[in-house]
Image 1 (cartoon, rainbow, N blue to C red):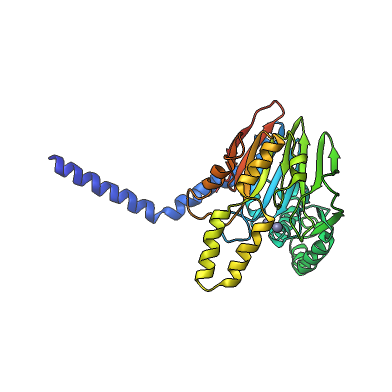
Image 2 (cartoon, rainbow, N blue to C red):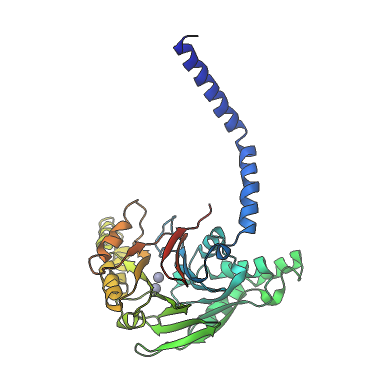
Length: 359
Ligand SMILES: [Zn+2]
Ligand SMILES: [Zn+2]
């Protein structure tokens, strides 16, 4: 056979294989699901991590629309304890896709009561209840007003709760484990830190940050000689710099004034002045990447992780500008986080980064 005939035969075979794969794609996908489901059900992220402190990025976005980023959420595994700091929209979904079971959550800490930090709370409570047949509601710890939010969400979900217990039975969905239970805290004065949780070598501390008019708090989690500090939402904060001193990792929110100005101009030029005003207003209660870097430098932290990116970053490469700006003021490593990222601080030392989104 001539070379041309071989090529023709190869092309025909290729088309036939592709057509077969297309016709049977549903069957192929079903087989893949069998493997993925067995893995997904059987493997927990925690089983795959060394003893230590782990920052799990379950939401790196903001209230501005971005399909690639869930609302604000950071889960922390400290030894065998799991905490969640803020639960924005999509948080429960992202945690599930990372192999973190909501049924294992000890408490959700709310940094402040802006809705983008708790609008994923109800789905998280539902997962906490359903995945573990929990007999106690999901504990939420936050500033004054957290009880009102918990009560409101419990009421909004009361009909659904009754349906699910009626359908699956009280053994699988015990009614006493549905929803949320809240504990409120008074925001400490100045740069004082208070201990919110202490057990088996794990400490969670809270301190005031500045995000007026809300009562806003930042957190420090310590375990095994390692520490991670979480800014919550804040303008550049001296209290944060003091409480982050010597931490292995500072997780800081960031607003890029340059990118924000582009959004503000676009809003104004298209006649949406009200949106333009909002883009202007948010400048005074968030932190620029340069200032986040300056706080990290002042606190002498081991590394800086930027999250809660404002404005949204839908174009590849855009998020890297946040890191570039922060590097002008911080000499240590700076990372811009994505949903699904994990930063691990093993007891034995060092820092490891991985990406754990399964789908
Ligand atoms: Zn806020
Ligand atoms: Zn926010």
